[in-house]
Length: 362
Image 1: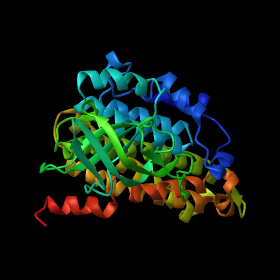
Image 2: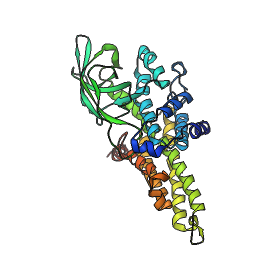
Image 3: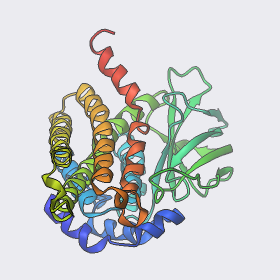
């Protein structure tokens, strides 16, 4: 599967990323190509047009996608789509909700997103009135918001419910607005914006799951997201390792390849060590989830470690190339900018270390 995805990505997903990154352009052509290949439907059942891939196979496929495709923003948007919208619908949707939305999301005709608010504290409120739900509030920095046809929105329910509830909001819903696209340091080809809901009326059938069940929906999405988002970092790290080693073997200074200098050779070796360690950590977390076991500890360890490993690998890739690595046209510095976000989204590195520490009674 990984080899097949690499061939696809290298053959179909090449574009002028320097210019797309500068203009913050989303690649609709890349999105459609991925849909035709089956990326958006990887973890979904065949009855909805999916590929019925298990967790570990999905990780391997996304790893191959990031190895063959340099557009980290496109890959990030694919992840936001799958784990923010598809998995919540698959796991908690009614049969009618699944039939209505999953085929459109799998085919890539629709783009999905989630608006869960900061942490587990939704900034959106839901009130039940005359058999309908009225949603009001806002959510900051929603990935895919400028593109999304459907959002899974987490809202506090003003009815004494024990927790938040999740709702399906289509972009055509009256009172739903998307703010301007936000300027970012990295992942610039994946659009991000604030969203607002001003008295949005939803019929009862737009409730996803049960009242008070929002936390379970958020947790189900997070399990997939934390594991599968990291797969892209593995592919990028593999690509940076190979290209850096090749550059170190070809670039000559003082009559020999720079890879013969211990300082440079050590950086290449460290890149390999970090990649192998990251891969083992992530595969273990994916395998545990595939076995029906709780991967909370392993996913937290992987998230904390791989985030730092990806950034350091990109820093080493820049350093090995010297001034060339710092220049935009050589397309190394962009991976570094993109990798920084890994320490923030889907739970910060600090938050995941608190999870790990909490499992030790702290």
